[in-house]
Length: 177
Image 1 (spheres, rainbow, N blue to C red):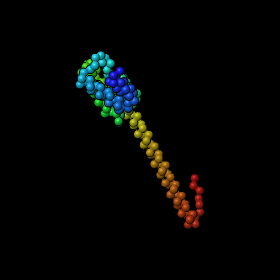
Image 2: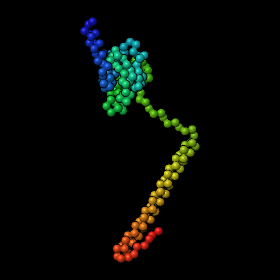
Image 3: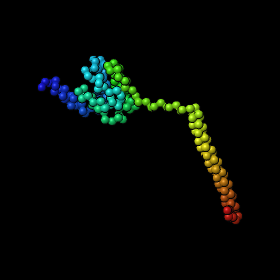
Image 4: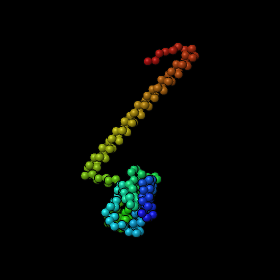
């Protein structure tokens, strides 16, 4: 066994202990080297075509191991997002150059479906208007009732203060119903 084979075996064995950042970097390096040097024979059938497939992609001969957590391999991840974007761009370039396969793209929310008729749009809009109006009227009614209760309590407090002042000045206490 030559020293090159031993070194290759050791480097492949150490790949299993890569962090997520290292695994993403390995993907970028391999894809960029394929852009520079050409795609290995037979590789265009096994290329991932989406971010999910790129995350799960395993190619131990090239040091690429799957990334277990889908949360770490997103474009919006605070730590790995830029690297994931680089990997996506490199994959897209490889796919466009060598396989003509569809581009790896971000998942997008489905487009809102237009309603069937303008009348349906109108009915939906009017329904929303009436619901909002009802909620607003209920809130106004509640606010008015609370204001009335506050006014009644203020009047009662004023009366009690007056009675207390009368009592303090030697008057008599009367019962309020």
